[in-house]
Amino acid sequence: MDDKTEVVANTLELLFMNQTALRAALDELSLWVGQRGSTQVHDT
Image (cartoon, rainbow, N blue to C red; front, top):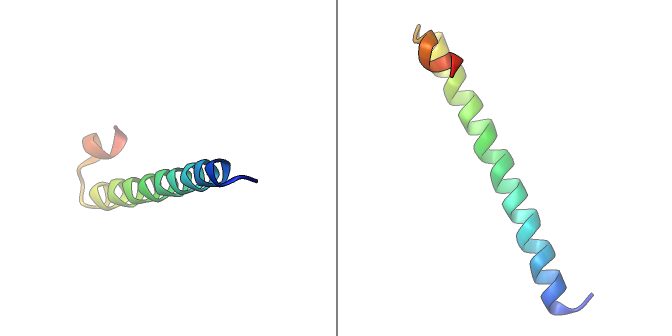
């Protein structure tokens, strides 16, 4: 694999990992808000 292809592959992998981490953080935040009684925010 040449350098350019490797850089693109690594970048895409890091972006995917970042997206996964952000989704997990939003899920945790949603659960936290839901536990505090704000179901309208939790449902959206």
